[in-house]
Image 1 (cartoon, rainbow, N blue to C red):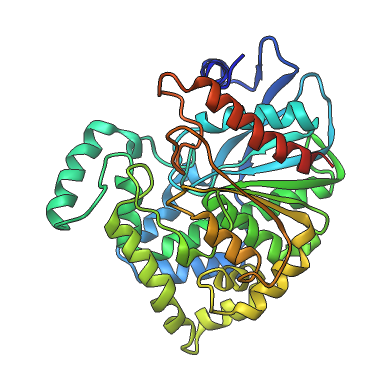
Image 2: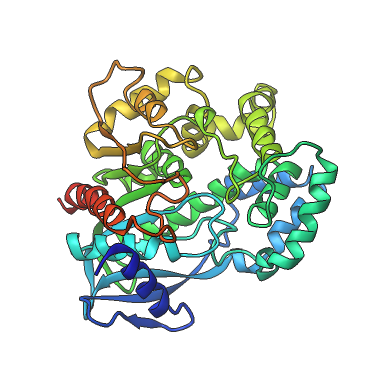
Length: 391
């Protein structure tokens, strides 16, 4: 079955409302597990609350129940009672469905024999209210946004909600990532201790990270909370550059106003705030996750700390970039990972395909006449990913 056919087939059998999905004709099944964000108050949640108090309406994020309790799917070999190895798949920014990633997870399971965990980022996929996904209502709001921000580019109903939320409160980008990182630490701890119903104690969890999920994966690997990722590999697909070199302007990611707002905040305003004595400064000095995030903002900022971390984990990292990627340019990924050419590792390939692709859709499913080329491209990239993560 070709990639596009399998993509449509998996979409038709994927049913999150059921406890288990059996995939006909395959050696794979999907199980769904309930997750609740940790309730205890930590330095991170205190910091989130402190920041949100300064922004009108943003404290309402705490009341979005879907973000705190949700289900996540795990692809695994059919009939498996337990597993001692896993791959955590981290998705891109502003994703609303798992559709794109079903074939990715299925292929990785079949080629590596490892369970693949699809974990949603805070406020993404099934962690946001259904009203955020209503095209008719959102289209009306887009018209208002275009009037409010004259000249805004790529403003669409698909990116409206993220664009509006980040323009209103750019801190949400960090706080959402921080919340997701804390959730993942909780999940990894649960797996490591043998408290997950599917995984054996000391299960090694590797990371497959795409797009902005790559930034999250790098931050987690660099911070390595509680040593949970000591032996974990990190595969980066269309990911790996510092934040400064990313361009999120896209019909399906965010509009130009939101992109300008978050870049200005993280490249300038945040540094000024951290430089002022107070709780925010203390937090960034004490949190390893926050420190790793801060070092990944700009190439020449906190460069020594970033490059020491990247160098120490280089043998566990493999990246693939696409030559014509405009969102996270492949040469900027290479520059970040190799410290401007001073490191020979980690391994990175820059590929290009003879069909119209973009960062957001590296394997197009609606363009006629390129099915075989898309299938070959998918097999090439995920064959390399599986070979790297299988060991």
